Image 1 (tube, rainbow, N blue to C red):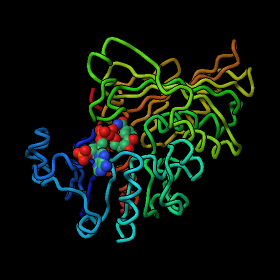
Image 2 (image 1 turned 180 degrees about the horizontal axis):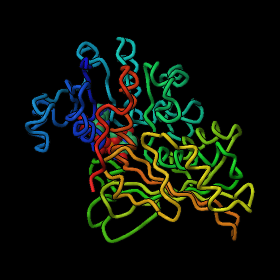
Image 3 (image 1 turned 180 degrees about the vertical axis):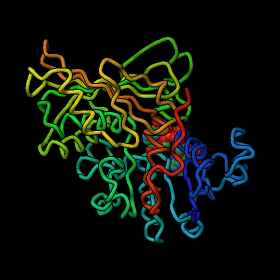
Image 4 (image 1 turned 90 degrees about the horizontal axis):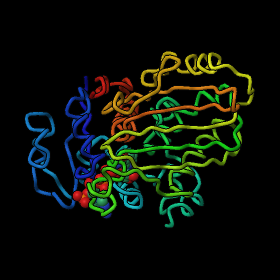
Length: 350
Ligand SMILES: NC(=O)c1ccc[n+]([C@@H]2O[C@H](COP(=O)([O-])OP(=O)(O)OC[C@H]3O[C@@H](n4cnc5c(N)ncnc54)[C@H](OP(=O)(O)O)[C@@H]3O)[C@@H](O)[C@H]2O)c1
């Protein structure tokens, strides 16, 4: 298998760390460049002892320079915060390097929406039209031909995959959808902040970001495209005392309130039959984050409740693998002409 050279900016973050872990076992994507301002000069194996004796351990961390990155890499992952990524993507693309951006900088198709929700101006609005939203189950063909992929957020990945079959099969009303989602603390990143200290996170449970969490417009954008009409929904995130994982519970009104649990389950199972990573659980089984930890699976359960006229969908992913690094690698596989699952076939870490 021909090897492609990968660069990674943001190696000291949780998403970057997960990229390094996954690429250590990838047969065709080789990590040749890893960038950080704080840890420049260190060997990767020194920063991350779990990588010693694995591919990537001898890469020496450097400060990002677009020209150098473009000369040495076929594709670059930008695992840096929103606002920073766009300034890196523009020169990389100009030098002819492909880019997978983990941040929100290219996820929203509307510049106005980006500027409203992220409270900053966008300096590359043309690229908003070009970037492909990187959920392989929805956009594989476009991703394969893309120079720039906007890797989706972790909550949006979980929510959109959960809602997909309900929308495609016209099972629900699109008004009044509520997404009640919970994430482990790694979703907030590795930078030091009081609110993610052990004593602030452990042994407690809280909501945050209501009612305008920044993942809301991203979810609404993709759900609207699937529904074929503008959809407004409530997205309510919570922080749970665990390291990784997301569980989203989605509530929507059934279009046909007499729909049986069997019919709803059958529609979901049919829609995802043959999917590499979406697993519709048997009727009566409910997903758990521990069964998707460190992997690419999205475990989904659907419950049609005739008593309340509601469809309840539960969707679980690993935020760092499926919701960030693994999905980015799946997108890079497609961009490099590789099978989407290359290097991503291991079972979750239970
Ligand atoms: N954590 C998740 O579950 C998750 C899921 C999906 C998407 N994402 C997205 O992935 C990106 C990274 O997230 P994370 O959780 O890994 O964040 P993080 O743990 O806070 O790490 C951020 C990384 O970005 C680098 N960085 C920060 N500011 C920079 C700047 N001005 N110039 C260059 N490098 C800079 C930092 O490197 P140095 O300070 O060492 O230079 C660090 O390696 C974010 O856009 C995030 O929204 C995260």
